[in-house]
Length: 182
Image (cartoon, rainbow, N blue to C red; front, side, top):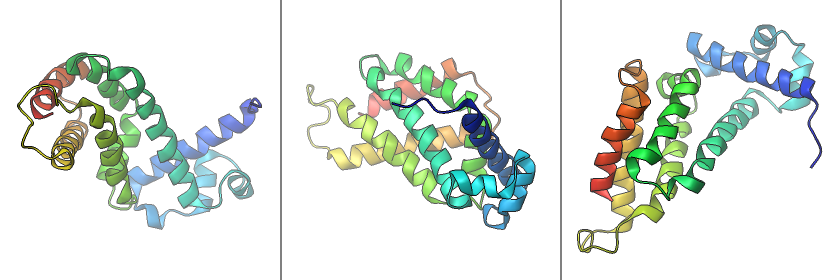
């Protein structure tokens, strides 16, 4: 795999940061390519070297963050809920500006929340307890929808309220609740 030039990475990071910052100030649909370029301190044409348009830029930003988040799934399934969720809440805390903007912005594509939900539901699939009798009469789709929607809702609440509890406390609370659900 070819190594990406650090200047390209630096430009892409500046563009992504510019989009997020602008989304905290105004509706995404009202943001122009020129505003993104000005905020990132690059020429307008530079954006088109990396992205088709502002929607492609936002989509790639979302994909990158979701991919990073999903990489946590690979080893989290081997841990108890409380321990497994700590890195996720730390990830949300580390990327607070992105998640707070995407979950609060009316102009952000509404599909973001749905993509987040699908990612969590996919991760929860391997967690459904079929060994005990507690889920015998429950449908997997309903359990996944319930747990995923609850998890996304708690994350939204936590972020919109300025993260009133540390990641470890959130992981303990949410881990206990999800463990009871699946």
